[in-house]
Length: 78
Image 1 (cartoon, one colour):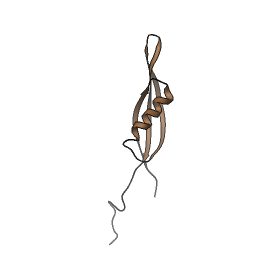
Image 2 (cartoon, one colour):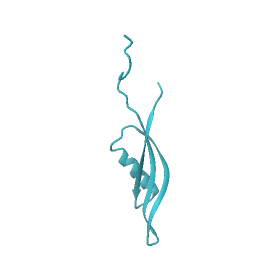
Image 3 (cartoon, one colour):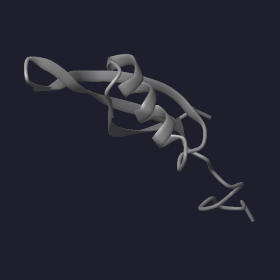
Image 4 (cartoon, helix red, strand yellow):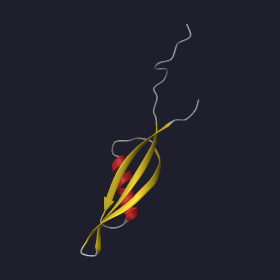
C-alpha cells in the first residue's frame, strides 16, 4: 500500500527572524495535526517600520501522514 500525505499551508511570523517564523508555523500546526513529516518554506517576507524589519513572515507547506482506520470503505470479500 502506498503512503499518502496531506499538505496544508501555514503562515508563521516572528519578530526574531525567518527561521523563528518557520518554527512558529510548524509549532502552531503541531497543535492540531498529528504525524507531521515535513515543512517546505515557500516564501519569506517582512514588515518594515522606520527602516527596520519589525516582523518576519514565512509561508510554509506542512506535510503530514493521513491516518486510516482499518478496513473502512473496503469490501470484506464475502
